[in-house]
Length: 113
Image (cartoon, rainbow, N blue to C red; front, side, top):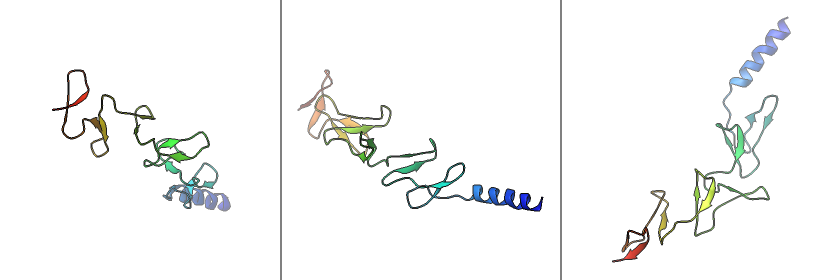
């Protein structure tokens, strides 16, 4: 009986320890410790390894990459998308907008003044 109590307390302690989830630092799975392989990071929301935000695209060969230069990562559609109508993506504001010295016309295209 005493051994069962010690085992139970040990399990509670192990499960209550907060561990980082990156590769090289274990994260808890139901019965074992496991690391996310490089370059994946652990996502607490999905309880799985995902691509990091700076390389969010998962390629068919299971590697993380970035979107092509004329596109950007769209979190809602989980895909690389491009800006339309001559607009360029502003990474700071996370929106497509007309480049400097251009305005948006009624057709939704960027034109020079």
